[in-house]
Length: 96
Ligand code: SF4
Image 1: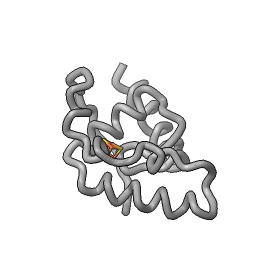
Image 2 (image 1 turned 180 degrees about the horizontal axis):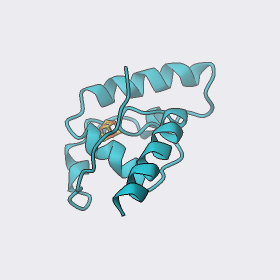
Image 3 (image 1 turned 60 degrees about the vertical axis):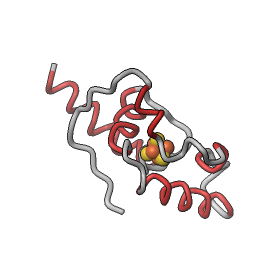
Image 4 (image 1 turned 90 degrees about the vertical axis):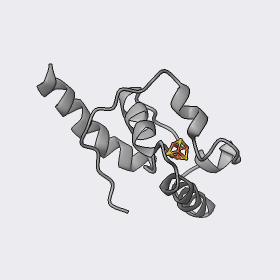
Protein backbone atom coordinates (compact mmCIF):
# COMPACT_ATOMS: atom_id res chain seq x y z
CA UNK A 1 0.00 0.00 0.00
CA UNK A 2 1.39 3.36 -0.96
CA UNK A 3 0.87 5.71 1.90
CA UNK A 4 0.44 9.35 1.32
CA UNK A 5 -0.76 12.24 3.25
CA UNK A 6 -1.54 15.45 1.48
CA UNK A 7 -4.34 17.26 3.15
CA UNK A 8 -5.45 18.73 6.39
CA UNK A 9 -8.55 17.25 7.89
CA UNK A 10 -10.50 18.98 10.56
CA UNK A 11 -11.43 16.25 12.92
CA UNK A 12 -14.55 16.66 14.94
CA UNK A 13 -13.33 15.98 18.44
CA UNK A 14 -13.17 12.26 18.98
CA UNK A 15 -16.42 11.45 17.16
CA UNK A 16 -14.50 9.89 14.27
CA UNK A 17 -13.46 7.13 16.64
CA UNK A 18 -17.05 5.95 16.77
CA UNK A 19 -16.76 4.97 13.11
CA UNK A 20 -13.38 3.27 13.51
CA UNK A 21 -13.16 -0.18 11.98
CA UNK A 22 -10.91 -1.19 14.85
CA UNK A 23 -13.47 -0.42 17.53
CA UNK A 24 -14.33 -4.05 18.03
CA UNK A 25 -10.92 -5.54 17.44
CA UNK A 26 -8.30 -6.49 19.97
CA UNK A 27 -6.30 -3.28 20.67
CA UNK A 28 -3.16 -5.38 21.04
CA UNK A 29 -3.30 -6.05 17.29
CA UNK A 30 -2.58 -2.37 16.67
CA UNK A 31 0.25 -2.17 19.17
CA UNK A 32 2.63 -4.98 18.30
CA UNK A 33 5.80 -5.29 20.28
CA UNK A 34 8.77 -4.78 18.00
CA UNK A 35 8.96 -4.89 14.23
CA UNK A 36 10.10 -8.45 13.60
CA UNK A 37 8.70 -11.95 13.89
CA UNK A 38 5.09 -12.09 15.02
CA UNK A 39 4.90 -8.29 14.99
CA UNK A 40 5.16 -8.33 11.18
CA UNK A 41 2.01 -10.43 10.97
CA UNK A 42 0.24 -8.20 13.49
CA UNK A 43 1.12 -5.06 11.56
CA UNK A 44 -0.10 -6.66 8.34
CA UNK A 45 -3.39 -7.66 9.98
CA UNK A 46 -3.86 -4.24 11.55
CA UNK A 47 -3.28 -2.55 8.20
CA UNK A 48 -5.88 -4.82 6.62
CA UNK A 49 -8.42 -3.51 9.13
CA UNK A 50 -7.35 0.06 8.38
CA UNK A 51 -7.86 -0.45 4.65
CA UNK A 52 -11.53 -1.11 5.33
CA UNK A 53 -11.89 1.81 7.72
CA UNK A 54 -13.95 4.80 6.64
CA UNK A 55 -12.03 7.18 8.91
CA UNK A 56 -8.54 6.11 7.88
CA UNK A 57 -7.51 9.55 6.60
CA UNK A 58 -8.77 11.26 9.73
CA UNK A 59 -7.05 8.71 11.93
CA UNK A 60 -3.76 9.20 10.13
CA UNK A 61 -4.02 12.96 10.37
CA UNK A 62 -4.80 12.71 14.08
CA UNK A 63 -1.80 10.44 14.63
CA UNK A 64 0.50 12.83 12.76
CA UNK A 65 -0.84 15.91 14.49
CA UNK A 66 -0.60 14.40 17.96
CA UNK A 67 2.66 12.57 17.25
CA UNK A 68 1.46 9.09 18.09
CA UNK A 69 4.72 7.19 18.14
CA UNK A 70 3.45 3.69 18.92
CA UNK A 71 1.26 1.31 17.02
CA UNK A 72 -0.54 1.30 13.71
CA UNK A 73 -2.67 4.37 13.01
CA UNK A 74 -4.41 5.27 9.80
CA UNK A 75 -2.88 2.30 8.03
CA UNK A 76 0.65 3.44 8.82
CA UNK A 77 3.25 1.73 10.95
CA UNK A 78 5.49 3.57 13.38
CA UNK A 79 8.31 3.80 10.84
CA UNK A 80 6.00 4.93 8.06
CA UNK A 81 4.51 7.64 10.25
CA UNK A 82 7.95 9.01 11.11
CA UNK A 83 8.48 9.75 7.43
CA UNK A 84 4.96 11.07 6.92
CA UNK A 85 5.24 13.28 9.97
CA UNK A 86 8.27 15.05 8.54
CA UNK A 87 6.23 15.96 5.49
CA UNK A 88 3.28 16.90 7.70
CA UNK A 89 5.42 19.22 9.84
CA UNK A 90 6.95 20.84 6.75
CA UNK A 91 3.46 21.47 5.42
CA UNK A 92 2.36 22.99 8.72
CA UNK A 93 5.36 25.35 8.68
CA UNK A 94 4.61 26.45 5.11
CA UNK A 95 0.98 27.06 6.01
CA UNK A 96 1.77 29.25 9.01
S1 SF4 B 1 -7.52 3.72 10.36
FE1 SF4 B 1 -7.01 1.84 11.44
S2 SF4 B 1 -6.29 2.49 13.46
FE2 SF4 B 1 -7.36 4.21 12.54
S3 SF4 B 1 -9.45 4.12 13.28
FE3 SF4 B 1 -9.38 3.02 11.33
S4 SF4 B 1 -8.98 0.89 11.80
FE4 SF4 B 1 -8.50 2.09 13.64
